[in-house]
Length: 306
Image (cartoon, rainbow, N blue to C red; front, side):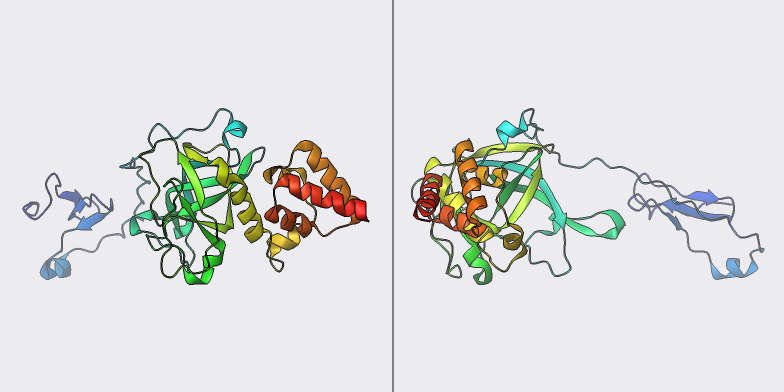
């Protein structure tokens, strides 16, 4: 039984004979599935009946190494609690689910199929640490939104982040209502500048585990550090009707450390709040208006006047 001509097949692909059905086939290099040669009608009618072929075994998943991998600067940090400090800026490969009505701007090559046929976004992103932790940290993401900046509907929770020295880039037309104070970053490599449309969403907090590979990018400039914490607390903890605000019923030491309180200041503020039964949001409001030292003085003044 002669094989069909191979002139129409890609180079390196050959016809094979199925001993069960006596039909010719080849293996598709992309799908790893059998593709059978079409059988002429007269042969199909005259072909002897045979027992049904056994169920075809699905070939095992074939691992294909990725075309691109992380460079050697991406590492799991040996001393993560020294690395993930407030104001630290780093890069990491970040993956999150793709919702059915997602508004996240991304390119098609950033979308991947994961378990159970669902899709996810996966790409290198920059983050700024705003809260430290023992095994993980909380961070805000930097994004250009495909060069479009922030949209009108959520501009009030976004702010400019830049590496352009003392003069930040101008806002875009649709960005009325951005947070007032830009955040300056000092990159490790002066040639590695942020895009002029880089923005930070203060309302969306990401949890970054300490055991993931990260690459250092730089740090928040000292003159912008207090502004970073101030604007974050204003947005993230200042929503009276949101779960984030209602869940923040009693500031814990970790939260106050993230707001730059010293250990002695943490003890004093917690003692004042426990005696007076003050609304914890007053702490956030005070820190948003002033530095940690001024906020402590404000509470001490209220205690003395009571």
